[in-house]
Image 1 (tube, rainbow, N blue to C red):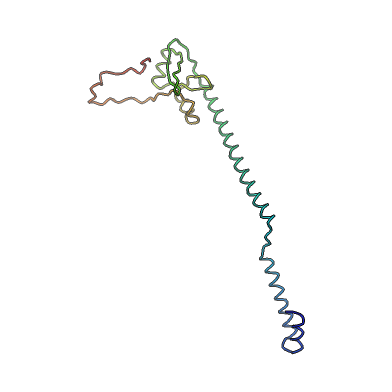
Image 2 (cartoon, rainbow, N blue to C red):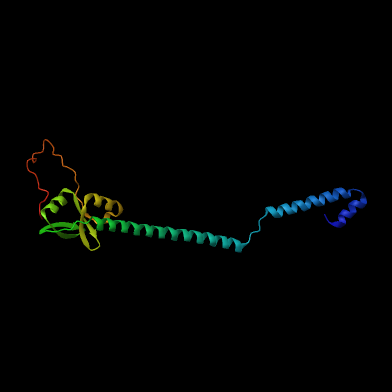
Length: 178
């Protein structure tokens, strides 16, 4: 209400000064409450908040990538350590042929090592450009961490022969050379 209108009401006797003060106070409180409840929208603060959230998301992604790289390095170090501490030196004049992808590779071993390789007690593992022999238990640990390193690991399962197999008497030797 304007001041002129208030004065007219007071002169006419239609309003009481106490009631006008109470009405003025109530209007003031309502304006203050509206101001508190209403948030001032500022484009610069919105843009700054959006950029901050984008930066946080980018930082989290970079942190996740760094953690993955550190984990890969740790696994590679574990595999390298397992191979270095458990390597069996291949020695002998007997060639053991195996395939690595599309290539046929060869390691020279003795009769005992060849027998253990064919029975699944030893495995051939790739270490960089070279191939080494490790015990089957170690090869299984390596396979859990990095399965691509294992080149040859024969299973140690005993083959059961069916009772009605007509070729049961003709066994194929495991150490067949090719």
